[in-house]
Image (cartoon, rainbow, N blue to C red):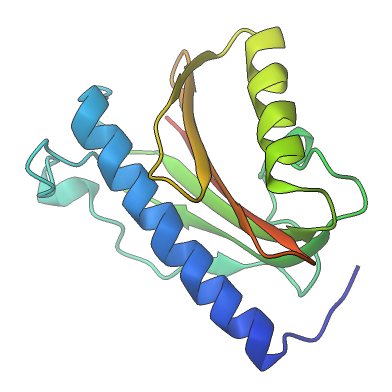
Length: 166
């Protein structure tokens, strides 16, 4: 599953990360999703937690092609996907944040449908909202939160998953 990142993929990764960040900000602002003691964004887009919740360490990246330790493997629904990047971030409050980006040969619509079905079938509360041209969703189950952004070109689809465990 190891893969060298080309300039084209580097641009796609940056685009996917920007899309992922936009989806997270939009979803949090629209939904007003908060969990007590967890790092959140206020509806205005400003940081809504205390400064004690700001991560004080750097991300811990997994080896190229591997998922970060603790990232729920079941969230990668395409078993043939190429893991581009995966890391974890710890907060002093005990929250753990994970992020993974992978490339898939499946279409945007196929992957988005797979994620909608997976979360609905596994007891997650799902809300979808994304700007035109991409697909994104936010799901919550107890103290767990996950956001999925799916975007792509004709030959490749990229999925960015953010997961927070409180």
